[in-house]
Every structure is written in structure tokens, then in C-alpha cells.
Image (cartoon, rainbow, N blue to C red):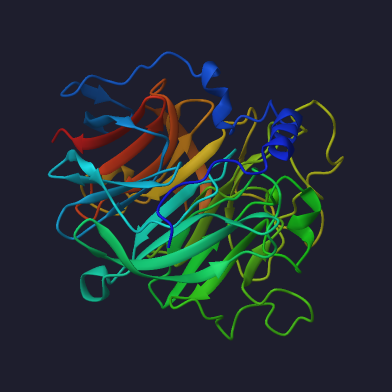
Length: 391
Ligand SMILES: [Ca+2]
């Protein structure tokens, strides 16, 4: 397997597609619009409505961090979009990078994306990774799993590769979530082509559900639908870059990066259609109307949407007692609005929100460690922050 990252081999096509969507707030090219960095200094107490906490900056030298995973020995793995996996040991970034990482399509929104340890990692050693896989005709969202031997990723096997390969640097998704019952969910985006989301014959604009070995569960909703991809769990999504499974309520939450004024949080259920682009609360980034309607029978409604858009990316659900007043809340990164949104839920409905870490930078990932601390990754500078309670 090649270890080097490739850059755009389809530069002319990509450049054209980037120009078409230069207003899109989730494009990394818009770093000039990033507000002044305002990260709290290490050791300073930050007060919020319900919890006070200290923010430690573990690194400000990451390059476009995207996903965060925790190992039982305390190490933290962080993916960098261009194709590296960085290792934190005892809270410090190691100079060595992980080897054995697959070649990625590192262009536009594509690259090395999410990383998650299997819920039974201590027993089986599997770590799951999504990325933009280069291939004939473009790139595709793919998921592999592998094991860690020292600083090497070994025994890698491909579990999923979205079909088809597409010449676009847009909307790859993706996040990984486990239900603890033998299944793994993978999210995608519609690759910048809206009709993909409503077409069950491709894997884009979908939430995918697989057995943990990559095989298709026989109770997936479209296994008996002619021509439909049997891996599909739900469809009608635009670009899902935050997804978390809540073990307490057996609920899969996903947010999606909508058009201007149409970012959403959804409860993802099997076989359901989340509406994009038939219904939406947003308009196109050029100001044009995408749809006249925001609801329609048979199409699911979000539990919340943001207007103006926040450009959501990354999501965690607070499960530990480290932050008791946040327990059960969703913590969601905001790229364009450069903060973390804490969303309160009441019986799985939206009950309020609070901005945390305002002005911290474009937040790409939020994660809760097994010992209950909250980690936040930002772009430009690429930081990994650790939030600890003050009590
Ligand atoms: Ca929707």
C-alpha cells in the first residue's frame, strides 16, 4: 500500500467546482474569513451557563485535524486531512507519524477523515477510519479498519467504498458511529450533486449501516429493494459531518451541513428520507431558491435547524459524570461560527443551545474520551484542546 498522499490529479475539474461554490462555508479555502483566534489560555477557568472548565491546548501544530480517537493506554490519535495520523502520548504530540495509512484524495473537502476505536477495542484492537479514496473516475468515501502495532497501522482491510467514484472535491461526509450491537454507521455527503441524495442506486447523501466486519446486515431497510444499495440506512442527506450513537436512548443523531440557513440535526431512523433537496430550510449559497417547501408528507423533519448556518462539523454526546450538568447534551463543532454548540435535549427533542469557546477557530471535531474529558480540534491553527471540569 502506498504511504504517500496524492494531491489533486484532477486539478482543472476541481478548480472549476470550487469556483462554483466559493461561498460554501465548509470549504477549507476560506481560512481568510476565520476570525481572530481567541482560545482561552491554558489554565484559565472558562465559565459557562452550567459548567466551569479549564482548557488546555495540547497542540497548536496540527494540520487540518479531522477526527479524534482514544486508545486504552491513554494515547490519542488525530487524523489530519492531508493524510497523516498524529499520535498524542501523555497529552503531548509525538514527532513520529503513523505509518501504513492509505493513500488519500487530499483535495477540496476530501482527505483523511474520521477515526474511531471499536467499542471493544481493548479486546479486538480494531480501529476504524474513513477517507476519500482516489480511484478511476475521481474519489469515493471509504472506510477501512486496521490494528495498531507501535506507530504502524497494520492488518488494514476495506469495509466499505461508496459507489461510484465521482470527480468532485465536495461533500464526502463522513463520520463513524457504533451502536454497540454489532453494527457500524458511516455517513456520506451528496458530493455536490443534489439528486444523488434521493437516488438509492448510489451511496451518496446517505447514512450507511454495516456489520462491524463490513458485511451487509440482513435487516437493513433496502436489502429487498431492486437496484437500491443494500448498505443504505437512511437517505436525503446533504453532507453529514457529525454523527453519534447515544447508548442511553438507543438513538442515532446526525447533523448535516445544509445550504445557507439550513444546517440540521436529525434523529436517523431506518429507511427514512431526510428530504434533501426536496425540502430544506435554507437557500443556495448564491442566494437562489433550492426548494419552495420546507416540509412534505413522507419526508422527515429535523429536530433543529440553524439559520444563519453555523457549518456544523463533529459531534459528541456527553455521557460521563465529569460534566454532570451537560450529561446527555450534544456538543457540536461550528466551522464558520468558530465555536462549540451545546445542545440540550428533552426526550430527544431540541430544548435549547449555548455557545461555548466562542471565537476559538473553525471547530472540526468534538469528542469525549473514555475518562470523560472533552476534546476539541480546530483548524488554522490546528489545535487539539482538552476541556477539564474545575470541580
Ligand atoms: Ca432535511
